[in-house]
Amino acid sequence: MSRVYYQNSDGCIIMFDLTNRKSFESIIQWKHDLDSKCILDNGAMLPCLLLASKCDLPDRKVEINEIEAVCHQYNFMSWIEVSSKEHLMIEDSMNFLVDRIICSKRLDRPAVKKPSIRLMEEEVPELKPKGLIEADKVSARFCWC
Image (cartoon, rainbow, N blue to C red):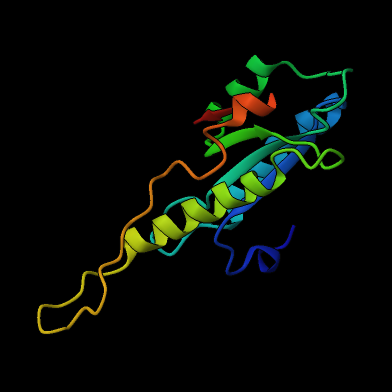
């Protein structure tokens, strides 16, 4: 993909189909493409979440240990099993990515100079977003890469 496509991105989701081995194998190329064309202003890699879709279907072609290995090897921030059909972990996945982006932007922001007045103290959110803690209750899997 063109650099223009990635321009001004703050985060990325790469998704593959758990029932399609070829889609899993293609995520490596997508991640290489992303990492080669998009770097944040602070020099860090773009936060990228790996989503394993169709977790509601029984005919899996990709093992969990393979997903975890790719997640760690290619520096995905995490991976989560999702089902669009069952609406399983979709919103939680998006919240997770957005929370991480917001948190990293707050940490990158320059400190307020002494003469300034702060009307409200801002709290930096935890890195664990709402919803993912209870992931086991909805039989979804994730890792903290």
